Image (tube, rainbow, N blue to C red; front, side, top):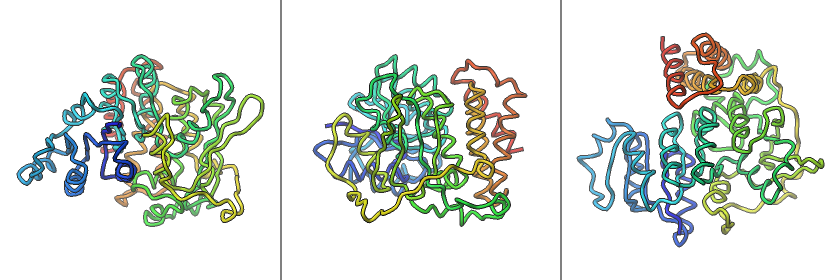
Length: 383
């Protein structure tokens, strides 16, 4: 029996995590659930899973729910302190970090300090504090288990591979809804188009990141830390069918790939069950129905998120923080119809320039530096 804390339980990853857990009640017990503000969905989940603790991060939403709270077996708590309490529960074995944004960073660090394994679905954790997180995990003997499909695929491909045998990581990308589009056409797309991903069911922010390929740039930065791989040995291939979820190339030239249907429940289950394998939670892959699989280089002159991510990795230090924070601001502005789609890239460039000119170009950094830069960039774009 593994006791699980789910941060972001009402989002796409969170709800699928609970689905996986519900299919194997003899293996998994939910001990804490946390949401940003979706209190009605949280209440439904609490009634089903009976966790010890439920967290509402947003204070206004928490105060609206508190007078109506009737789930006496579950303690309702609020804010960052509530998140930190949830991940520190003595009986918790693994924390699924599925909250979007910088909110997930401090709870992840607290969970590692408490000796909990991390099922990682929050990109900001490694993008913004990769060195700090991985050093702390090694110090505490904690496993960082990737939940997203690409890193989960690499994680599976590396099983049993001797250290030093990895030559290259090959991240696959669907190409999103705008694959093959010219730069001029990309300037005219609307948010309704960008929110229609051809293969995956995700939240709005991640779907926009996928359409811009910023998501793949963030995954490159994550892979650099998760698998201790030099940035120049991380490649992206566009694979529209989303059957090969990622690959590794070994020093002898062999290439290993992980294939499955496009369903996030599988990488979630792999992380929760590790080191065992569970019973099937997705339909089997029938390659005769797939028929043909294709691969192509991404158009980096149109989708400039990839060279921007490489530049952030090359410069190191806090530049990935700047990229991430500026992108979050840009996506919010795009979803609010304040900027055009390709302006997302311009905002990222501007954010990295801001970091450079405001003294954030140092290689060594602390968690306080991460939050200071993130806050500074948010204020810059708010103005």
